[in-house]
Image (cartoon, rainbow over all chains, first blue to last red; front, side, top):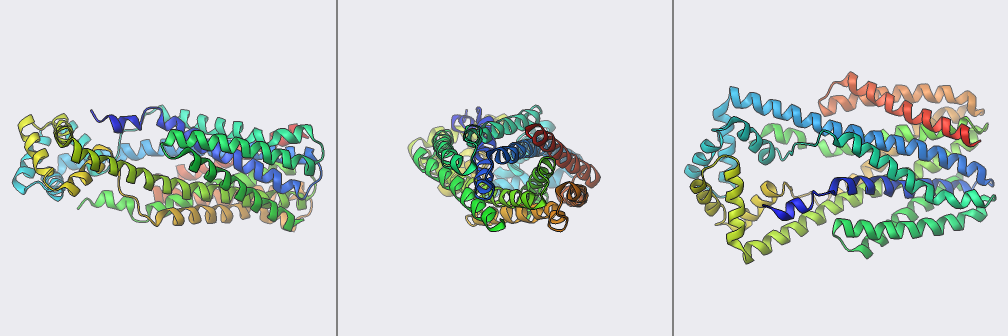
Length: 229
Length: 229
């Protein structure tokens, strides 16, 4: 029925989760490694810190995503229970809310009241209507929480390994850093292009933005680590 | 008019941004420092890595939040422009979409058509109606992007400094670690309680969850850093 609305939903949440995880995964471990390479000579120590950061970051973000999705589901259930109660306890007030809403959008009061009356005939559908149109809430998919958490964490790990690869092969951290920067910027560029395409915005603009975010974060971490040591 | 809906909006976005930033800020730098304290003796190096992580993490998350909010605003504008076009080019189809929507919720077809006809009289309001009720999109506040980015980054920095404080005072990292763990768990507990209260869910459940997330992330980072070294 509304193809453009549904077009945004198909696979959109998985793509969004991959983007969330990978954006940070490509940025933070790279920036941390770059920052440390400015202060510590050994690639081994940089890898230790980078590996620890990937573990910590992926778990924190993955669990964060899991809990956020579960929170959305709980919020939906709580609001739905509240509407359910109100529909039973104060049906006239609820009907008036619906007709006021329709009047706001240009219906004349008599038609709005008639429409609200018709909507309120089927209690379940009436509650559905208010959940979606008054509160703007859609029923979340119950399996989403786990999938969302795992997707975010996995994307973080995949993204985070990329900038560390050069430190595996080059023992001196300062020599590995330019390779890490090159590999990461290339990955950010590709990621930005794909992200832009998925979001329906300009891929080039998205790629440039993504590279700038990564570069800024890395430069700040580098400067800070230098200042510390 | 709909107080319960508006109750969720007042200040809700700022609280949400603080929660996003602080949840990761209290978790990732702590876990990284704990992981490194398992592999590196010097608190100074742990602080260097922790400081670099706070800089990288806060900038990556803050810019991520900034760009996400800007993306929402762009998405809204693009969808609105599309509805605007469709209202001009295929008004009958758009009207039919609205009346089908109302029929789905229990209006009889004749009333639904009448309501759709009335709604379509004022073009701006008609588009508003479809944006909100068909696509479920609310117009984002244009100043939100910058505020959101700064709030997330600031919360990350504040959260991230907490677990590092003991490493300032105790030169041997392994001795500082239990203090860092204690301070951070206490902070997570308080943060979880406040977060639960703000979200309207059980503060105790929220506090326990928050401490578990932090603890798991830290344990994984610790194990990984040990395995590396």
